[in-house]
Length: 492
Ligand code: GLN
Image (tube, rainbow, N blue to C red; front, side, top):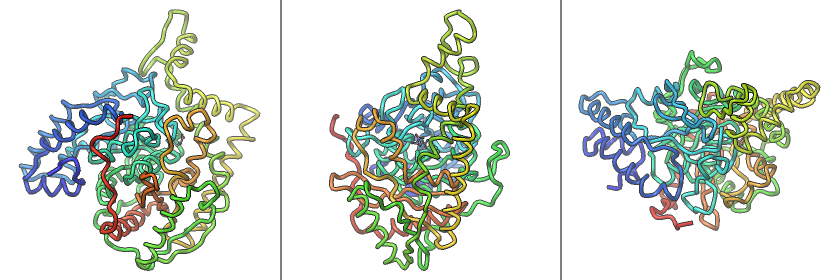
């Protein structure tokens, strides 16, 4: 049995039956990480000792018959999650050496179940990027083709799952950072509704947009992970006190009579032909399963990228003001006074893209420009949210591509920020509207790269998009199963 190739729900069965231990699973994943990650670069830090200790605790709990759904499952965390006693850098030099004194809520909830954490995952610095090339630890390589990006900003979270270096991972999504890398790496990624999962202990990028979510091999695994982390938390003022559905239990409810919207604004020139073909084929699969496909319009889609890059940078410039070398991470002090210390710490600590965004955001918020930029963007955001409200009067789920193209080449867009920003065109509107969406593998390009579709749901209707995704996965499982990425990717 190839232990690292199992899904979480398969691992659970073996753990419950006692034919595999958490220690064996953990060993297998650690071995795999040591073999492969030199070429993928998904991990910033491997927490081998803590993982083995957690596995022992999990095995004890299993033996005592007290297992929770994720007891003994080897997971890994984007380095944006603060973890007690484990260095947390957000892939930035400015946070080097920062060892948080506590776990955030999502992490704590997984730890309570005695899940095993293998390490901290690579990402774009402070989650700013779409390619994982903005990391102080170097880019993540796509496990399907190491010359291509894994996507971003949760590139490590997606690549680790795709390359079987973790059974599941947590990422964050501000403008697409779970869904886009999931799509590029051929895994399932879910951005829950704003307020569904606590962000307590998650380093903030753009607070009105950030959300925590799972990445996993299949839909059922995604449902299991979401179940563990979803729900109200008094320590996050944006957390919403609504009941959490039983996601794994409702997966098989099917899509008969479900109305699926196809927004015309998402099928534009510039959409890669292979992506368009895969999305259209997926719509046909759903029609065959008894869903009704409805043409809809989200008329303000065109303004989403501009609106997002004003709001996200404005909020980021404010959030990142706290990193000045006094309380967190690395200080650059040449003894020439406090202001110079701030200046040198920030000049050396932040990477180029983060600095660009702090400048853009500070500009957008400065007096005299606030009304013209930030306030205007907020108004446009309302129009975009209303587009979705109107569309959800007609349909239950909206189906779109996740990204206009499959994974692009490393270096292809790094010198052209506008091109890079445009690659988020299909994921950003969902964050502006605050609703939930899932990225699901739905095919391959002619070049053999994974393609993902996006299923967008009504606010707090994670159950609906999960069961919609599950129906597709089940219907296509007997057709061509995505080949697993080679254990030996070509050396780049
Ligand atoms: N690519 C987008 C950005 O750079 C989204 C990132 C994210 O979701 N964290 O802002």
